[in-house]
Image 1 (tube, rainbow, N blue to C red):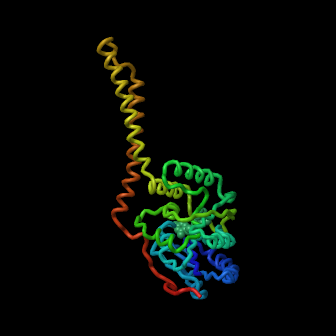
Image 2: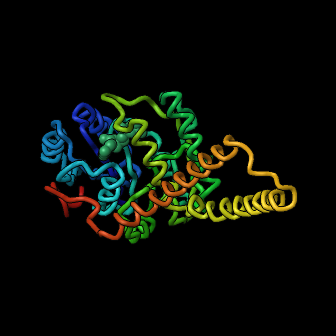
Image 3: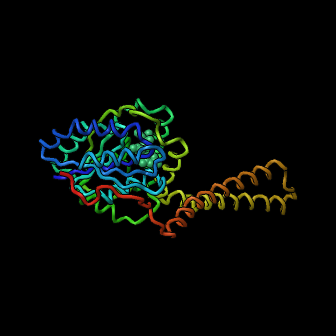
Length: 315
Ligand code: UDP
Ligand code: MG
């Protein structure tokens, strides 16, 4: 059985060698279980020595393969490219910073042997993440699962085992605005969960700041839900109805009791409130329109500058 680890890397020169050492430490145990592993690196346009180190590793180890992007396209695109180039019967996306431990891979393989098509690795302890990241992640899952018909498992990242059949279905999805965690869940199949404690990043810093995570969250919600668009119909309907009643009251007062419109304050509050509400509505439409616009261009998701050891099966 061939297993491909899909590993997107961006400026990870400090982590690559440790990752390979860690892999080699487990290699014989994988072989004993009759699994033949190879590693599909995707260099996401690194600006440091990452590409050179990958080339050196590929020269040294026959199981290392890689594609190098022409620039940074982001982890979502890198992951998709990795899935497209992975040749294994089983495919496991992994981070290079050792936050996704190899020990968990054994548990995944066991679950696969028991009949699962997808094995999710769920973080039961996010103690190594910052407080802000934990809370915002928690909020994202809550909001997403309320809004979207696609329910995402809490605290599950891209680290998961998928069979060839599952990956082939994911690769049929044509969108260029990617939210991989969503796409990988959307295809379904028999899914089980294993849990693990997520260790701290080996070397270097996280590539995801708050702004990037925020955009990823919006990408996730807009990818699978149109509720933020539809909400305005109902909100508009309700306010129009209330406004109609209020307008009626003013007209009646004016006609029968001769009371003039009172107050600058109420006028101003209404103008400002509805001005704000309308701008939010336009913003939400903009989020969707912008994505639709990019989608219609049908640009490729990534550009490969160079392939290393492609078409060469490990072992
Ligand atoms: N990564 C990537 N392209 C990017 C950002 C990150 O390929 O634009 C890779 C990165 O090298 C790492 C993985 O994606 O192997 C996860 O990134 P990171 O560890 O920074 O994310 P975190 O674990 O903090 O969520
Ligand atoms: Mg990490």
